[in-house]
Length: 204
Image 1 (tube, rainbow, N blue to C red):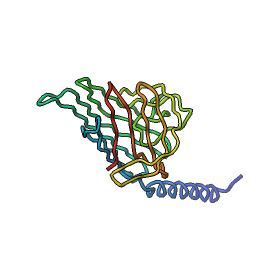
Image 2: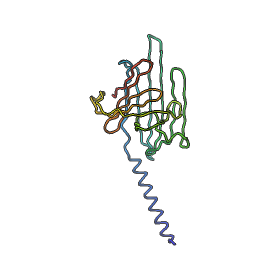
Image 3: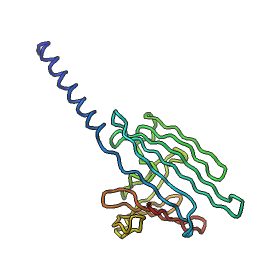
Image 4: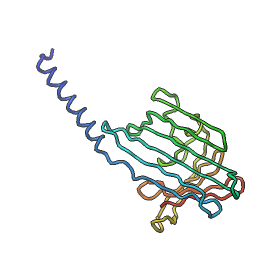
């Protein structure tokens, strides 16, 4: 049987390890913020921003802000706005909340740690997707979304910082979206077509 001293010594050692883990997580750098200009048929029509903040206890907070507007003279014919906040502990999504406005229709989601869907990668794109992934978490509806992910290989992507070597994947679901990531895995480009319109993200 262990002595009381040994029990306290082991407990103290475990607590110290736990404190080291927390300190290490809190000091982990967050990814670089992402800022895209969004082009429709080559013409700017909005922005997409992703910002990262590390909390004192090591959680990574990810805020996505999207604003897209198409006008015809003084009339607004298309409007899309989204504000999403994700919270991560390491590779685990622990919460996802936000609002989306799409052409007058509003969506609100608020998923906590106990959600059945937080084991899915959200459709916010910044983490990337692996071939073979069959479902992701739709950040508009908070529901699973069936997808097919295929590799596109490598090519150079034109950004506001010049040409960047990138790896591409194609995500096919409700749309077919080509996503591009640099050699460090950071999201640097996006292309898709919808309603006969060509949409391209240019990293600023």
